[in-house]
Image 1 (tube, rainbow, N blue to C red):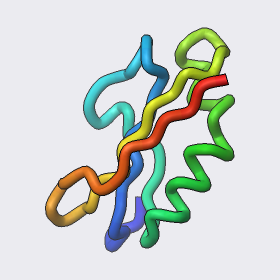
Image 2: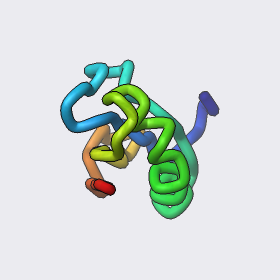
Image 3: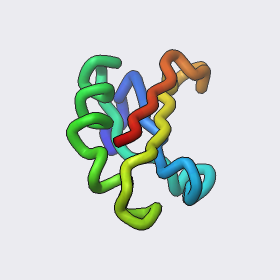
Image 4: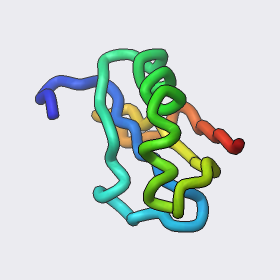
Length: 75
């Protein structure tokens, strides 16, 4: 992980989250980049939950550790 990333993406399957730091999926300097990563990788995230897509995501500002955006995708 980059040392100076501004944002972190925590994401998982609704029914099978890994928990805590194990749900850290990506980091970036923009919210848009992490939104794109979340939706582009929905199938990878869903594999933790048996393969069907029912995923959650939270983008967190690194310094404050505050949630700045919540994400969801179901198919």
